[in-house]
Structure formats: C-alpha cells, structure tokens
Image 1: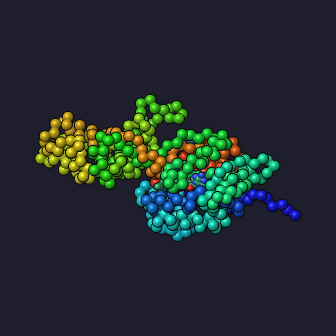
Image 2 (image 1 turned 120 degrees about the vertical axis):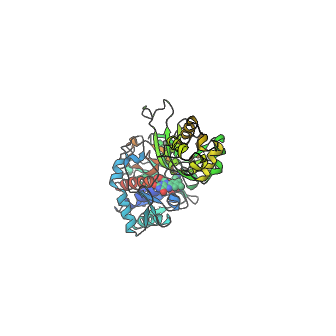
Image 3 (image 1 turned 135 degrees about the vertical axis):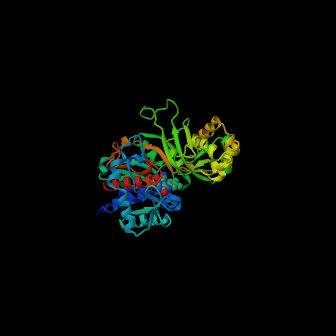
Length: 421
Ligand code: FDA
C-alpha cells in the first residue's frame, strides 16, 4: 500500500494574493500546474480594490522601461515585453469590462475596481488555482535533494491550526511596505535575507510631502485646492546614486494639490519617488508663462490692474489671493518696480517649499527599493542563489511612475514567473 505523505504537496505555492500573485497563479494554473495561493489578509487583492481612487488604473498605453525606477533600469524590460499592456487589455476586453483613458495613456475601469479584482479571481478559479486566505506563513525551510522534486517546506497556521506544506516552486508575491493597514508587510524582504539575497534600502514613494510649520500658514487654508504646476527636484550638492555617480534632477508637469499636511496630487506623487531628504523641490506655479515679461507688459497696458487680479487670471482665485496675502503686497501693477516684478516672478516660478518629509508608508502607493534585481533572473524572476524560489511584483526593486505602471509590472512579472514555475 502506498504511504500517504504527512504533508500537503503542491507544484507551486504563491505567497501573496495581490496583483502579481494572482497573475502568476493564472499563468501557472493555465499550464496545468497545481497552484496554491496563500495570503494572511482576510481578502485577496486589497490594493486592487482601493486603487485608482476606486476605479483601478490597471495599465497604461505607453508602458516603457523608462517609466520605472530600479538600480538596474534594464531588468524590467524582459518581463514587460513578454506580458505587455496589450495582453492585459485583451484580458479586460475578453471579460467585456468597459474602461477609459484618463490622461497620458492611463487606463481606468469604468466600473469600480472590484470589477478588475473579480476578473482576476474568475481567471484564477478557471485556471484551477486555489486560494487560502487568513493564513500565516511561519517558516520556510529548503528541503534536501532526497525530497525532489519538492524543494521547499512551509509551516503555516490558519485558525490556530499548524500545517506543513511542500512545494516544488515557491513564489514570493507579498508586495512592499506601503499601507500596512491593507496587509503590507516586510515578509518578502525577510525571506530574501533568509536565502542570502541582497535587499536594497527601501523608502516610501508616490507619497505626499509634509511641510515645515512656516509654510503651512500659506498652504493649510488652501487645503483641497489643486492647480497645474511644474515640479522639479534638484539633488542635494554632492549627492550620489547607489552606483556612486552624481544623482540627476527630475521634473514632472501635472496637478499640485494642497493638503492639511502639505502637498499632494499627481505631480507631487511622481516627484516624491525621486526626492531624498536634503534635496530641493522647486515649483513653477504658472508653467509656460514668463511672468516677469508679462507683468512688465501689463504695467504699460493695464497699469491700474491689481496684482491679485493678474495672478488670478493664471491661478485659481483663492491661490492668487493667498499669495498676495502671504508673499506679496497686493498693489496695482503700475506701482511695481522692475526689481519687485522680478522678485514676484522668481517666487511664482521657483517656489522652494520647505519640506519636512513625506507622509511615509501610511499613505504611500509604493515602496522604492527592495530585492536587488542582480539576485534574480529577469526572464523568470527566479533567485539565482535559490533554485525554485521566485520574487515578483512590488517586493522587487522595480517601482513604476504613477499611471498604471505599477500594476503592469505586477501583471508582467507575475505572468513570466507563472510560465516557468
Ligand atoms: P500587493 O501589495 O498588491 O499584494 C501583496 C499581497 O501579499 C497582499 O495581499 C498581502 O496581504 C500579502 N502579504 C503580505 N505579507 C504577507 C505575509 N506575511 N503572508 C501572507 N501574505 C502576505 N498601481 C497602479 O498601477 N495603478 C493604480 O491605480 C494604483 N493605485 C494604488 C492606490 C493605492 C492606495 C495604493 C496603496 C497603491 C496603488 N497602486 C496602483 C500600486 C499597486 O497597488 C501596487 O504596485 C501593486 O498592488 C503591487 O502588487 P503586488 O502583488 O506586488 O503587491
């Protein structure tokens, strides 16, 4: 009589039922692999649910490697080119889900984000993959060669019951550190360290800035107001990147939103991924206009116009009024000397708000840094030092710009791993 194993055996175990883990389950399941997805949260895909302001910005028409930050900017190319935005759009189309382009290629669901999550869960079920929630993974142990083809043993606990699982391939899809209230944990980094993989420093990215108290007099009453702006980040003098080269500056055009704590909005979130403590953030509040020239011209043509009125023609009225209360005197244009006009133009085009920091992982959309891509195969996402162990999604040192790029990385990296696990 054949002896029953004391433990459950699985072809593939995926830890993390987020965007990357679900996609990996679909692609592995479609290859007839026996897949079990484990998650400690009560529900799968929490971040998909809250994404895109409730309408999941699931990908972008213009996915390019230069929309990603990573110590190795080439690493993401292989996965992104093998499971593309068009593949994900085809999946959305197959399910008949309506969507729209918001701006710059950003694709949002017309329905609530739940539609995208339901689609993923349907695909997971159709691929025959199983999902187990509220399950803690307590220990991962490599198995001896004698246990082949099984390579990893997991000790898991669900509802107080401990269990041992064996798998041939183990995929870590546990995401980054942002939004711990949604199930985020440092689990993936700990597993990487356990197997001797380098984990690069992490920080909160796509995150609002907080301002020093002296700036808040201007900004706090403006909370909720947004305006188009050009934001630039000038690296601190002498600051170097992790390859020892001088860091480069970065600029983003987009909406700037004033908040109770400081600054947010798409342009702020984008630049936050490049900003480090000590860097200078510069904001052009009226990009595309030469205010210096404009005011000098108006001094001839509309000398009696008030500064507040002129600024209000290019800025929201509340902001123009606030600037004339906190930064400038609201005089008529005729009263402004050349020097004064230059001062005004300089402040409006080159505002350098005093930043105290960011709101951190509590509100960040992603985590910058993570598992060093040098440790992984860019084709399969398998760890070079630990055969059969894979890392996908946000836990890896690949972070996208705002606009659907992070989900596309999760889909692409999940899919390519699923093709080989
Ligand atoms: P993800 O975080 O999605 O999943 C990880 C899973 O692992 C979770 O289910 C978690 O519970 C589980 N887990 C963690 N630790 C575990 C442990 N110890 N044991 C078991 N399970 C564990 N991107 C985008 O492209 N478009 C958008 O519209 C948005 N919008 C957005 C809004 C908000 C509020 C946030 C916070 C983020 C976004 N993002 C986004 C970013 C996007 O959500 C993110 O990049 C992906 O969800 C990353 O997918 P992963 O599967 O790698 O991690």
